[in-house]
Length: 194
Image 1 (cartoon, rainbow, N blue to C red):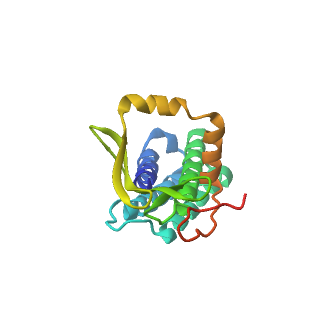
Image 2 (cartoon, one colour):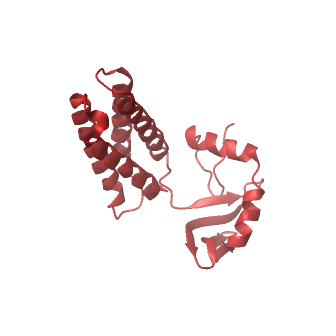
Image 3 (tube, helix red, strand yellow):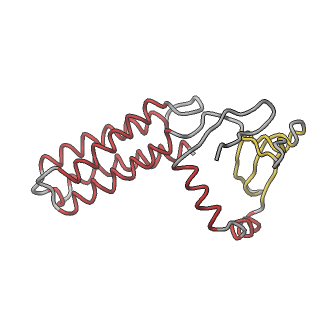
């Protein structure tokens, strides 16, 4: 997930570097240089994670990216000498950078995800997600002891997606945007206070 977020951030930065040389910025030289500078900074921040070999993210880089997104949004809303297309580009890019950075800041550093029963018993410790010719798979341990790779076949993926109610989609979005974390108890998954 972190690589995808970094790729999107880098693409937004490239957009900000490239678009000022189009006709949109004809009467906005100040906006041109600000957007190029912020775009170059966003590309560098995105590449820090894309080119990093170690797992996990660098929280400081994500926070700086969030601040750059806020600067871009404020520039699009409040600074003068911007045409409608320039203003829209800055506002949309700023909102995207802020949203993606917010999610990135809250990504857990954990490399293991536990799926637990309602009683708190660990059913699956997931260590990796993969995609290959067999389908989409999860690697991990079943019941804490048996190593396994579990696949969902491509034709079954549509059946799985059909099972997802809107309530689950909204709950997942809420958890991503407003994460809640409680310390995990030994041998159990994370419990929430909600």
